[in-house]
Image 1 (tube, helix red, strand yellow):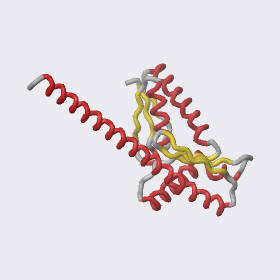
Image 2 (cartoon, rainbow, N blue to C red; image 1 turned 45 degrees about the vertical axis):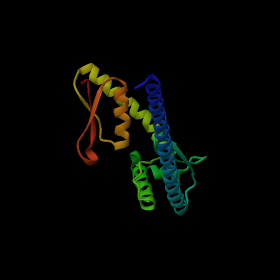
Image 3 (cartoon, rainbow, N blue to C red; image 1 turned 180 degrees about the vertical axis):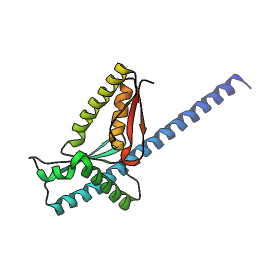
Image 4 (cartoon, rainbow, N blue to C red; image 1 turned 60 degrees about the vertical axis):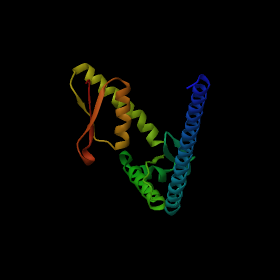
Length: 190
């Protein structure tokens, strides 16, 4: 094979690699675009469901939809302190969790896709995330002090995820244990 034919073959191979990379990038962009449009549709379906619920209950609230980290976040807030919205949070967020599941079911029914949307009402989840950060820090401090594992109170999967992330950021280990409503986190040094 001559030097010229080797250079032509190398150039042709490089062109094919560039073309393959461009095709892959276009597919990735299309997948991201498709994913974002699916999440936007998910948000619209859930927002319509929740708006209808608010109308039936005669509760005022503004609905905001946001797409972050591959997830749809829906928040409902009122300009004034609306007792109606507080009742939709419930004790320890129990009603909020149920409404979130109903919104997810409305998305599943309309789109035939499972949803991981997160619903927040009057900033409850944001405030709770701060509380969970403090709980994680307290558990880590107790593990440092005693060297023994610390079991936390049962919490929802979403709340456990926040605590797991906080504990990992602090350089410690956490695991979920138990079943159903009794599922809780155990924090340890190893």
